[in-house]
Image (cartoon, rainbow, N blue to C red):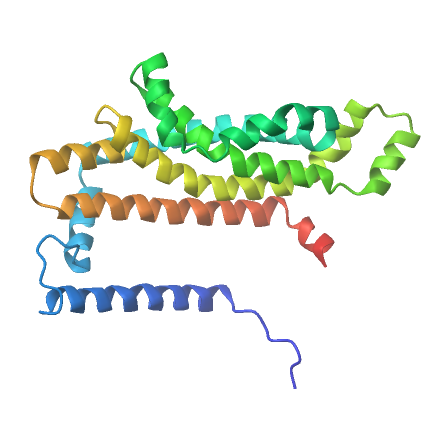
Length: 263
């Protein structure tokens, strides 16, 4: 008798995921084509999928996808640097924590999209204000994860370093910050998906017609055909899933050792 249930294999997980996606799509297809929901303009899965395949072969649309990805990557990079540095310092030094606690608690609940127009006003149109809007949204999970990761550093390692005469800054740089990197990366993984949503939303609301959001905005204003808009949204969602999977693979590769510590 097995006391512990074996975890699902990768193939089983993929099979269950594909089955769930196909099942939900089939249910939506049936409902939207039935008299139960008789509303024009709703996204019929087969039509949206067909339009998505067509868009992937459209070089002009792929240029907009590349713009969104560059904007998202720049925003995530800025957020990672700011979040790891500030979160690490707040977790390691009490005075830094007290100095930045109130500003962090004040700015953290603010929607970054609301700050976007101010950035456009100050910096002008282009990729930079959009990337900074993404960075503001992405910074908080990275900062908080890093801060709590630093606070959870093994006290024996810290005391040992201090015994050998390491300064407070040296302990932070050589012991606390490296030990918090798995937590910081978990924050980046969470922030990556959030950043992609914010990137498309920022293009839609404060952009100048560039990116996937700009494509949705411009197409929606000149056409009553909703399928390309749904298709662009679906492609953005698929990119989000692929980005999340990529971060999971990197996490399991770089920080495999942390699983041993958790046991």
